[in-house]
Image (cartoon, rainbow, N blue to C red; front, side, top):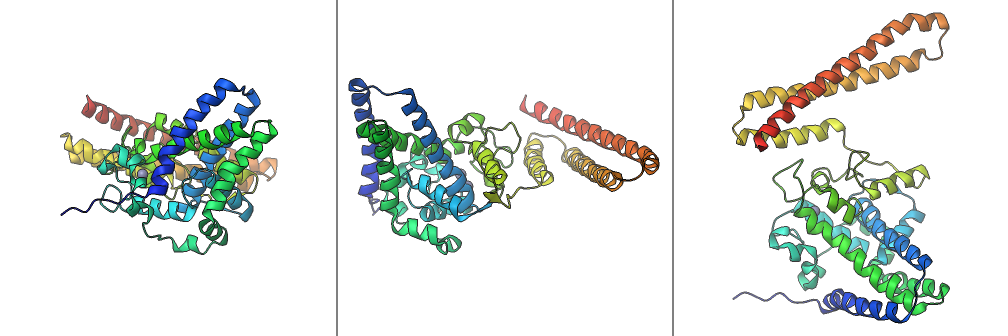
Length: 371
Ligand SMILES: [Zn+2]
Ligand SMILES: [Zn+2]
């Protein structure tokens, strides 16, 4: 006999009633009362800080330890993170680590294999998910995290509803504050996080591994403050970035970089470009072979790309070292090494051309296989 899953009523009721009651009150409120542009600006800033504290704090700092920060910043991240009503950081990070190590299996707490809705927020309705044992010994030692975990209701109600009422009071609209900065903000920011577990495992490309459900998508990245490059993230969870190119939409990455600029973040972890390209090529190679392209040809081309990429790196390093070594030397000596430096520049150019040529050839095969 199959035992029915038990509903966790407090969580289930909050997740259902907050949007229903909150949205109803919101429409009633804006019908009877005026809101100002300043109020909506505060709403946007508060909502962005809430989501960024989840993505840069709960996710990339606590769950993955992809960078380090100081106690003040940790407090700020926990303060706004609590206001999102997504549970204590300890529980959130522990569930998320399970998701990474057991992706797409029975042990994945929000496995997409159980359906879009289940991965999105359905999993949170059940006791077995809410009561899932916590496994994060490193975080359990952190006193701030411990405090937030122990007094979570105080943290969440204080930051999620009380602070909104106080901000509302400043605008002479405490009720508006409760509804707009409180309820509406919580509903919208929760949905943004929930998309990471549903849409990020449904929409987009499987760039680095076709064996897992996680996907890379620009549209989802916009909806989730940069978490949409999720196939990359599952492949390289230690990297503080999710969007690795400068133009990839990843406000969380930009926030961490900004924190670093102000001395609030250090030891930002990144995966070397060589390793990233290798994972992409390995994944595509398997697929090209399955499409009937000669394995030998693919392997040779793959090695050529990686080898020329290495060459560019090596030549660039040599060039920088030589330039630094002779920068402050006499004019005479400088003229002497000038030729050597020009030659090095040429070597870099040549290696880059070789690399681009090999990569173009590879792209030609992938286009052929797609057609
Ligand atoms: Zn995921
Ligand atoms: Zn993650």
